[in-house]
Length: 119
Ligand SMILES: N[C@@H](CCC(=O)N[C@@H](CS)C(=O)NCC(=O)O)C(=O)O
Image (cartoon, rainbow, N blue to C red; front, top):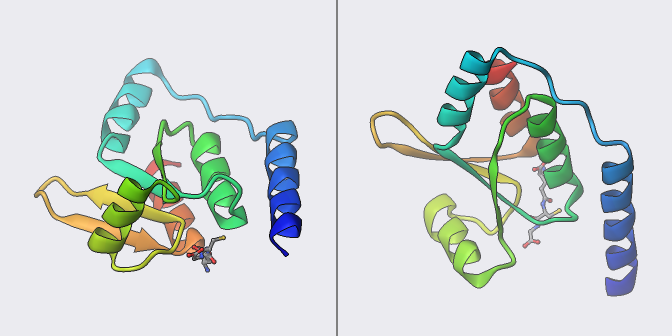
């Protein structure tokens, strides 16, 4: 079972690399303000998780330089569990302007949030 999951993961990564989405174009000024806004976010994820790949593809399409944290790394795994409450990926950590932090689970919700905010 583990080997099948590993092979599927590699296939997902390969397909993702081959059919990589095109990033949208913004004016330099608009892209700079998007880049700055995205600094307040981190995506907790696994490399070969299909839900995480969906979110990363959406971020690429939207030209978002999203920081990713591999939740298999013990330090990031702890951050995710302590902050978000669950060891589940993808999870987007969003630090708001007032310092409040939101931990957003569910790939669909994350993609909707990114598209609503940055498309
Ligand atoms: N409905 C969720 C599914 C996410 C999901 O199942 N993630 C798996 C990895 S692909 C996970 O985090 N499982 C918990 C674990 O491996 O500990 C979504 O769309 O984000």
